[in-house]
Length: 160
Image (tube, rainbow, N blue to C red):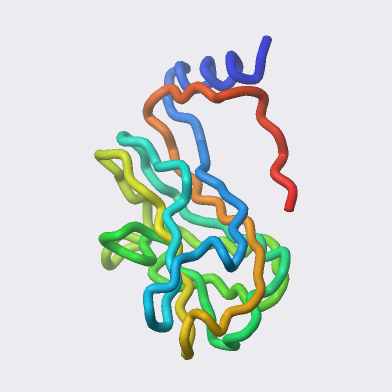
C-alpha cells in the first residue's frame, strides 16, 4: 500500500480529517524588502479551503544576522501573526522546535479557512530590513484538512 493510499484512507475514515502542513525552507534573500523595517514572503503552497490551522513551527538553521531585534511573524495578509499565536518567533540564533499555536482574536485556537489562503511571513526589526545579511530557516504551518489532498509523490523528510 502506498503512502498516498494510506493517507487517503486515514482522511476518509470516520473522522475525515488529516493533519497536513505547508512548509518551505527560507533564506534571508527570499524575502522582499518593504522599504522599511519589514521583509515579507508568501510561501509557495497555500492552505486549502476547508482547513483548520493549528499553528506554526520554525527551525532556524542559521540565525538571522545584521539586526539584533529581528523577529518572525507568520500569518496572512489580513493578520500578520495569526499563525504564530499573536506573537513572534525568535530567529536570531539556531533553534529547533520554536512552536506557536494559531490565534483567533482574543482566544488561542484553530483558525478556520473557508478559502485557499497564502501564508505570509514577515520579518520585522528595529532597523532597515536590508541590514539583515544572513539567515536560513524551515517554516512549517500545520492544519487539519477536511478534504482529501493527494500528494505529488512519496513523503520525504525535509533537510536543511
